[in-house]
Image (cartoon, rainbow over all chains, first blue to last red):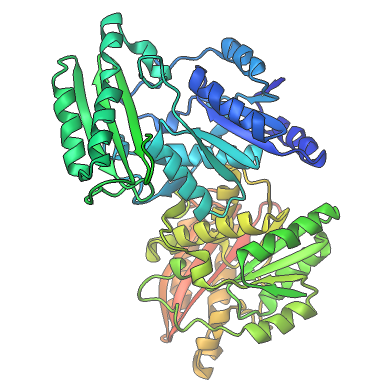
Length: 285
Length: 285
């Protein structure tokens, strides 16, 4: 496994892999690798011959009041985890390498970025789509892997890649959870023991909402129930609970699946997000 | 030479060329091919093994009051001109092929797009950068060719390709002119005989401005002189004359080269643009 920080070093490595006829996969990350990232890498490892990951805490996707400075950085530990997962290449650039003098170009997906997290994190998805477009152009993978935990991000990136005709498969990988149901996230480490004990209620409430949807409830009815359950937890401050169509992300004003119920809530210093995907014709979430 | 209208047909053609080790060049056009386009194709032909051109009148770069409907479309005639110029592939998609259902992604270059034409054509450069990003991703050329006549466009696209790390060389090709100095443009056909006789004054005025710059004038002084010359021509309605730095496109508040003086003027139904590039240490424009 190699770790590289300059864009110019990347090109010949990827070219060589492609000349050997290898299929290249990319897992873009902000580091602080956990079991969710490992699942992405393992999915890539199973489908691709050459697996690259990027580790870059991207300043342009953090708001001014957000946790850009506090976000965990642990490259050595991450490199060990990536090596164990069979990764071939880590691309870990500096902010200066990614955003040079005079940088002025942004990629923006309209519509899909306006609701859910987009409503509360202005500019966040513009930062995400811009940096992902750059990473896809730098690595030029055949496939890129994103977790379903960041569901809106996955849909927005799929739209961007399709709209800009990037010849890249975008693969969504199911959310990895702790045994008690909490979605694994780098931000879980911000939780105190007391908050950590409360945290699983987010997914439990989403599960209850999903049950209602499978019984024919509308998105508004399901979201209302999720909010009622979460309101009982005094440590939790709900930012939003919304039920949307899985592809358009428009409010699900109809009854029953397909639907995604997505939620964001503050628990102490941590902003937690989670979602549940309710597909048609299945009993599973 | 092949002419193809579907994106899915393009990929295997380009892949084959690249597998043969060929260098691929792209000349993006809106058709109505003229000597300026031929110069782009000949430059590509001299540098690349496989030359593709795109012909697409891109709706998103026209304002609501602009000439999208009137813009000339003449695919058969263009195909003959391209064949004579040694082009290997024409990509001529429909608007539906380029902007499918749910299209929502835009590429925007800030700063560089705010002055000059950008001030008078809101959204124009956003349309240009978005469609060029798409075309570059569809064709995946090693180099793409743009005329210096659309100077701001050339600089904006170079910025986009650099900022988004697209591994593509952007080549600027000098403006091709009629014997009397008029920059060749598809829109020159909108001119009446009387207007056509007047049109060369635009470049003549820019040349006079360039002479002043070589004598040490500031951008403001040179632009003022250009405007004074053009004001003597009653048929011409000047939109702007600005002297800017060739790379930053910021107003040239300093004296002497390097500088670009750019102008736009209406002559009847035609909006003409032209510019003169004044380099350091040369007597030529």
